[in-house]
Amino acid sequence: MAYSNFTLAAVLSTFQLETVESVGLFSESEPVTPRPHFTAELAKKVPLAATIGTEKARSELIVADVLFELREHFEERISLFSGIDFSVDVENGLTGVCDFLISLSPLQTVLDAPSSCSLRQKKKT
Image (cartoon, rainbow, N blue to C red; front, side, top):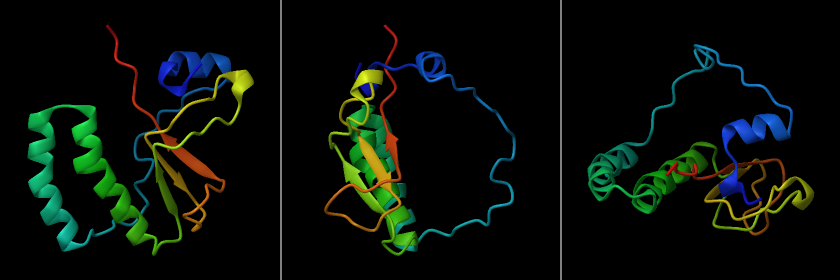
């Protein structure tokens, strides 16, 4: 099963996970002030992405910029990938292409673990 076919309920069941909802999970984290250039660009792009109203528009106009800002904040000690194959466990259905992926490795030419994968939520019809 491709990542895009997973639902939260399926992931919880298949991998025997549980959700922990916590208020204030990051309340002790210090705020990060984004660069002025980033906030100015985002102020222009968000209304356009909202008007277009597609996942692709949000991905190209908002998410990519936010991830780039994240990488800048971490002084390029993390790497970003977009649209790469991330088939890590075929037997359990962990296969497919991730929209965005963040790795804690600064190596940008090859994906190195650990990583976090961003996936589109499957729309209900």
